[in-house]
Length: 134
Image (tube, rainbow, N blue to C red; front, side):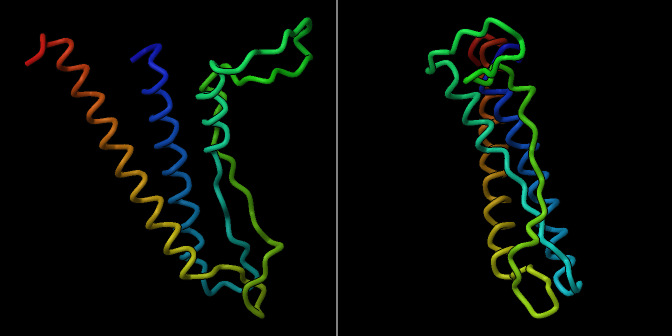
């Protein structure tokens, strides 16, 4: 799968979704912990930059210290986890909304399942190509 951007995007997406599931599960587990600040994980914006990079005209860099307007390496994509402490949901300063977290967990699980289906279809295409079309 070396050099296959789609494969690497699927791989990074599954890793980010797993990290989001972990953070959301942690939020649900701490629903009654006073002062708990919920966690969020984001990575889709980084993946979008990598996917859109071939369509962008890259800026010329004359030095390594110059910024680039395109992300060239899918390996640089890492899920970012942050604590959201400024939103207060209850009087005990816990900001976990059970309905929101359950919906987020369900959405993440469904997206994860869809990505695993896409990955299994991709594997079936590779097998068919290697095996001669059977």
